[in-house]
Length: 84
Image (cartoon, rainbow, N blue to C red; front, side, top):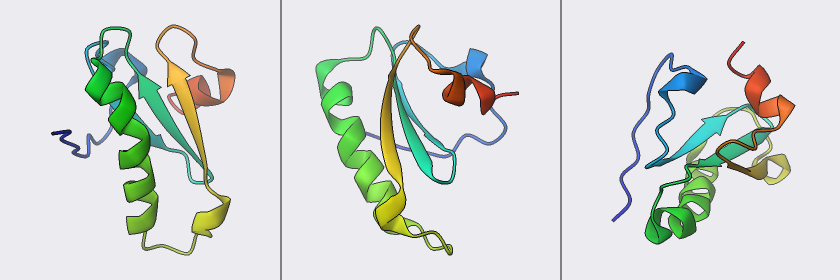
């Protein structure tokens, strides 16, 4: 069982290494994977990302949204910029 809920106005410091998170950056959906997340969470986050994209109800072209896996401690600049 993988539970997902929205966390409004969170910062990068709020990311907990025991969990996984999705960050919607409009054309990129980041799947952040904490260092201490379990196997189930690591495998399930991409499935949840696909479910999330399927449920989007705005004007975006769902087929153009890229899912980018991000490991804790190895965040790319594009991910970090979302928190500035």
